[in-house]
Amino acid sequence: MTSGAVSVAGLVADVSAIRVGDRPVIVGIDGRSGVGKSTLARAIAAQTAATVIGGDDFFAGGTTLVDAPPEHLADLCIDRQKLLRVLEDLRSGRTAAWRAFDWEAFDGRLEVALTQAAPADVIIVEGVYSCHPDLRPVLDLRVLAKVAPDVREDRLKAREGEIGPWDRQWHAAEDWYFATLAPDTAFDRVVDTTDEYRL
Image 1: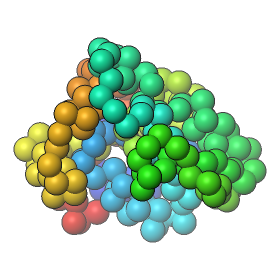
Image 2 (image 1 turned 180 degrees about the horizontal axis):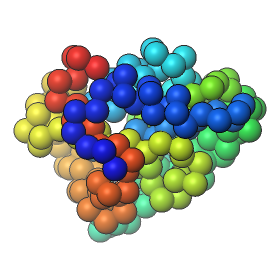
Image 3 (image 1 turned 45 degrees about the vertical axis):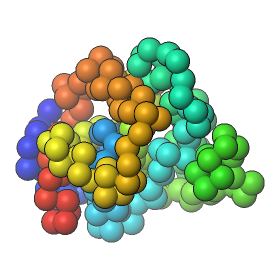
Image 4 (image 1 turned 60 degrees about the vertical axis):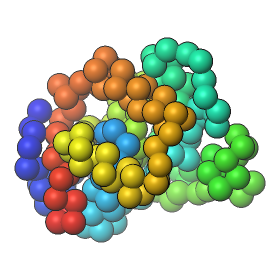
């Protein structure tokens, strides 16, 4: 595991070193909400022509408060089986298609239109739980994005406004997940994304 000031160029070099033959390299970028996973994924994709899969498409946790312990919330948050099928399709050189969670409607439904992703030499899946143990068998590079808690809180407030009880329940689930199933040692690279604008 390498941690700290790992540059985008360094991650791109990692991807190049991993790639053997025609099979795509699949990179997982995990981290708590608000740490800059999407920005990091875009920065890597800009240099590798990667296909980026957003983990939020696979949200399955519902739109109301759930009276359950954090480990249960962490388990149900993302439809990992659907995400795994998408990654396996892309890994095999097939176009992947799925119906994403409809965040605009925010009533539990999925979008009517299919989202599609074409095969590419590099596939990036970014989002909380993207390096879950269930997904690790198809990941070639596992990256954890981190920032100080106060920086993360400021970013979340700037992006989402008020952080209410619904958000807090998922933050508690994230805390459990990263303490239990995805500690720093489970990743190949740990990246400090405090200087997000430099990515």
